[in-house]
View 1 (tube, rainbow, N blue to C red):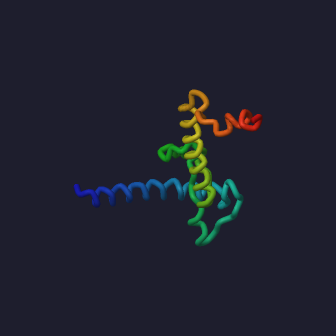
View 2 (view 1 turned 180 degrees about the vertical axis):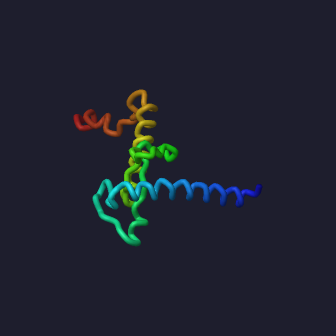
View 3 (view 1 turned 90 degrees about the horizontal axis):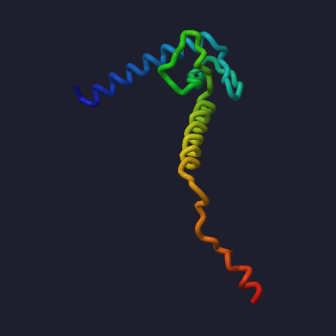
Length: 114
């Protein structure tokens, strides 16, 4: 199977899966962003996305308990916060002590005494 054909099949499968839970979420919840509170209707409804609270896109319970509707901006912000948190945790895990080895003003007191 060619790479482009496989890409098309995967994209179509993803689109079908997303449209399924998106349609359900839009029927279950009022058309407001769960973060900023903006209301969406008509053509602007396409700016409202379904966010998976546990970040697992395969966890789609029928009661919608893992979903919340977020506008595009708040959804991007939520995912960026997760990326930032991940890198902060990596940095903390890699630290074993002070990383600073050079002290630019270490001899300043002695120079001022002269």
